[in-house]
Length: 154
Image (cartoon, rainbow, N blue to C red):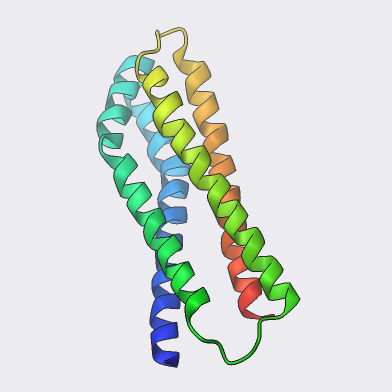
């Protein structure tokens, strides 16, 4: 049973790390480099829309995988009764994860369509909003990952 726990834990950590890494790369490398390459807002926005096409369902599928492996870890019998600290970390981690998914869904279904239809004058406002949201998502997912590490040591 311990081997199953390790495999599920590794899948959980790797999936969360992939999500975090993809967001960090997008924020710190892809967008800044593409912005300087295209120079003007409209071609940059067309490129980003092309790159992002279909990503919503991949992100949500990855998040579902993270959630399912997390649930799997909770349902596997443990060696001992979880401590109060561990339970608190898991609850906080779950809350942060739900907030991150909710923020992603709001951004994906509400803000993204508005961004793609924005006038050239509105584009900088949307780009700034998306940068702020990207930072918030990185903080939420990163904090969730830190809580996961902490919970495994309590």
